[in-house]
Length: 275
Image (cartoon, rainbow, N blue to C red; front, side):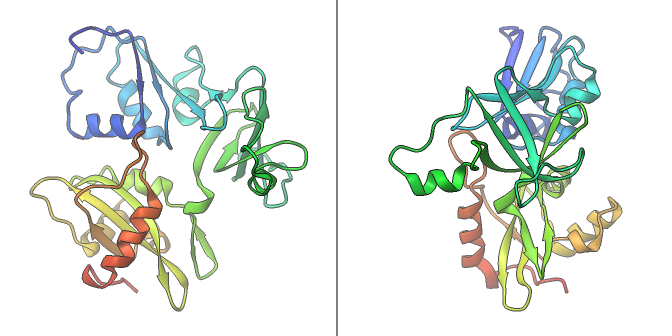
């Protein structure tokens, strides 16, 4: 920060790493006016933590995809709670909606699939009619694959990914908020929860963690900590696997498919399953 920038653009993984390592503690951040967070799911607590360190700046979020431009954008002039608890509303020329499994709009504040359309949405994959037919609805809405809720005012919060949902014996578990909570554990540098196959329930939840140097954590200790945080036992992970580093994309998103493959390879050599 020695160059005193006034604007910053951060991915949630970068922000979490800075906060976790204490690199922003005691820093003079008064020159920052706007910080835009984008790139992957961002827990509201992460934005709140950064906002608390900015005496004059405002933190808000942007959402888009490779197949779109900026479809959702927070408004820096809105109250802090709106900027941190929500991403924002659809940008000019864009439309956004949250729908159920039959593409019917969900009531306000109900979780469903996030869909978008508008001038910034691409026309489709080149010469791939099969992929395009799965990607778009009949009336032109792009299926993002994200789970979201939308308020009465049109503000959107992303709550997870459809493909990340763990189906444990018919009970659907969305791990995004639980991952954000586990990231706050004193022993954990980074976490991600993936499905592991189970012959009876179909899938169980496996928590993968990158531990801080010289720290150790057992599954039992993690579950005790989650209980103290008010997390219902139904949502506790049933296996804990420590990894040296998360498989990441160039934009610092965790590649969960690669992580799930790693879990399957290490399946028998880590902490026991909690029944």
